[in-house]
Amino acid sequence: KQEVTQIPAALSVPEGENLVLNCSFTDSAIYNLQWFRQDPGKGLTSLLLIQSSQREQTSGRLNASLDKSSGRSTLYIAASQPGDSATYLCAVNGGNNRKLIWGLGTSLAVNP
Amino acid sequence: EAQVTQNPRYLITVTGKKLTVTCSQNMNHEYMSWYRQDPGLGLRQIYYSMNVEVTDKGDVPEGYKVSRKEKRNFPLILESPSPNQTSLYFCASTGGAFSSSYNEQFFGPGTRLTVL
Image (cartoon, rainbow over all chains, first blue to last red; front, side):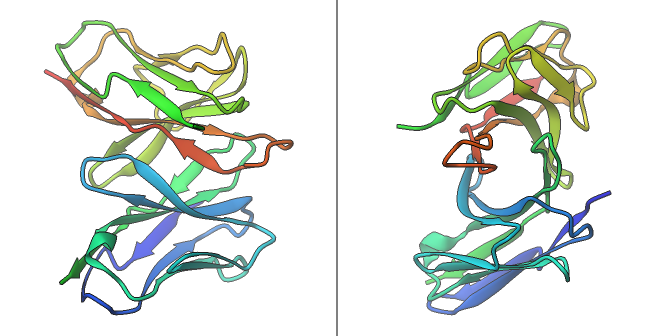
């Protein structure tokens, strides 16, 4: 049974720092992995999608990597800003029904 | 604009009063699903649909029904809501093999349901 873990659960950093969020999964047989952002009480914004055949994806200050063999993905945020404060969720797509298995997220606070 | 819409966004109701949360997507996606999000439990799949008239249970289907009569719509029905169904609900759609957004999931804005 696929399980997704995100570490750390919470992170507080000063503005301008580069930071790494971690996601690990137990079953390497995945179709893809998606990183989402969720603001308090709000919906889910897709940040990056990495297909199983890819090693990384980049969008602006965000870079996500995928290592299927070790069951890990990282989300790298460069030059963090207060507007990056949110919960970041990692979700693995491993089945024909397109079901996503979710981590519990990392709550990020970027302090001015 | 490509999007998934849900209505209502907020709903407060009482135990046993049937309700429907609508979900619609304009991307011609085959796959649609419903998730609920609860503190400490994360997001869990309720039901999914591979195409019109094809639906199946996810991980937490008890107390819910769905239908897929049209490709764009996938309503979530609570026949007799109970307080343990108080949650934040998300609808999602996913492009199929011939879609430019193959396997990328797009989410609606969420529906916050409170059952008293």
